[in-house]
Every structure is written in structure tokens, then in C-alpha cells.
Image 1: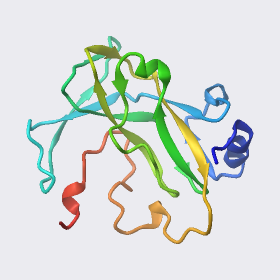
Image 2: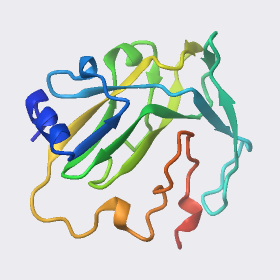
Image 3: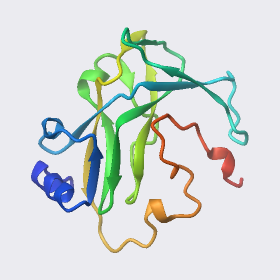
Length: 178
């Protein structure tokens, strides 16, 4: 079940959801709007290897914005740092962003209970589009969890994305055994 604005506010008051910076104006009927941070990255190599550590080059979005180009995967990051301790957060793109031809995640829209970090975005676009740091980029939707939780994400010793960072994080697939 998706949480309402009142349920989200109650969870924030109880410390079950943390959002920094927080602005009440970003709370919608059943979601919270998040914004594009100033850091972007893209992979250095044209061919990526799932068994290798694929290195990224970082860029910073200036006042003039940054033009995204099709056929390039950009890693972005939310301005907001979030913590979710009692619900499952889902990150979805805003419709206004989608109408510009921008996708903000390829497959990683679901967070885990216990995720405490900025969200890395897997950004792609259908045609060139200029983006700006601080622009609304997505919305967090919270779902109730059934049952007790044994493994909170931030407590898992093998969690690959626990290092808090305001910069996008590249894939850590290479840390898996396969």
C-alpha cells in the first residue's frame, strides 16, 4: 500500500524517514519530490564489463546547465540524502521530466528498508536536453512492509552502496561472484 502525505509526515516526525534538505513544499499527495544534485558521471569505456570495475569520469553541472545526449548513460545523484527505516522507498521520475524524454533510472527504482544515502540515478534521454542542478528530477513513494525485517540494508556487511556520498556511484556488479 502506498503511503499518503499524512503517513509520510508521521514517519518523518518519528524519524522513520529522514530527508535532508527537507522542504514541506516538496511533499505531494503521496510522494516527496527530489532534485538533481550538481554531480554527474559517465563511464570512461564504451564497452562495459560486468566482471570488471568500470571507471567513471565525473562532471559538475554549472550555472548554465549540462546537455545530456542520447546513447549515453549518465549517473546522477539526488540533492537529497534520505533514510528509510520502516517502509520501502521507490524512486520514480516526475512526469514533467519524462515529457522531456529523460529516464532517471534503468532498473534501480526500488530502495531497501535501511537505505541511508543519496540516490544514484541512471539517466538516459531520447534527444539532447539541458538539465540543471536543483531541478526537480523524481519523486519518492513509500510502501508499507509486511512482517518483521531481519536484514536492514544499512546493517548488511556485504551491502555495496552503504558508503555515503554526494556523488554518483558506479556499478559494483564486479564485487559479486558469478
